[in-house]
Structure formats: structure tokens, C-alpha cells
Image (cartoon, rainbow, N blue to C red; front, side, top):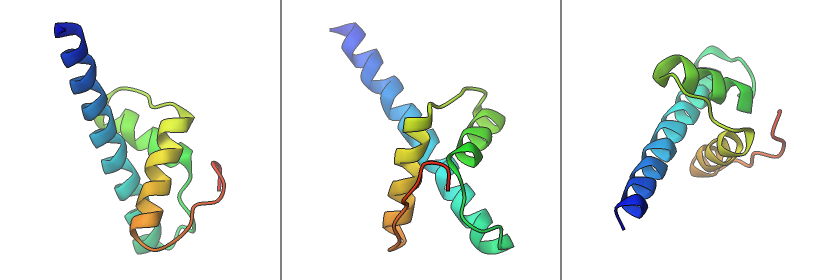
Amino acid sequence: MFKNIVERRNAARRHGIAMSAARKAYSNAVIYGDGVPTTDDVINLTYGSHGFRLTDTEAHDALAAVFADNGRRFNSPTA
């Protein structure tokens, strides 16, 4: 039981960090006119801010959620 609690807590923490990095990548792209943020941007921001690496799938899902929250569609994992 304790193991499940720890796993859920860690998953929630990873999700929060991924979403924060995705929001930052999106806002940087909008503010500075860098075009469309990529999953690599999210991965780099996560590693730079928190010292651990996200998978491409986690970064893609977080970035797609931020795009959807802003009324846009994120089509490609590298676009």
C-alpha cells in the first residue's frame, strides 16, 4: 500500500513539472515569436529546472494539453 502512495505522489509530481515546463515553452514561443515549441524544448526546460528527464511521450502529452488549453492543436511530436 505504501508503495502505491509513493508511486502516485511521484506521478503527480512529474505531471506537474511537465505541465509547468510545457506552459513555459509555449509562453516563450508566443512572447518571443520563436514559432511552435517542440517536445525537446519541454524536455530541456524540465531538465534545466528540476534536474530530471521526461520521456518524449510525457513531453508530447504535456505540450498537447497546453495547446488544447489555448484552443490550438498540437499535431506533431517534433513540431
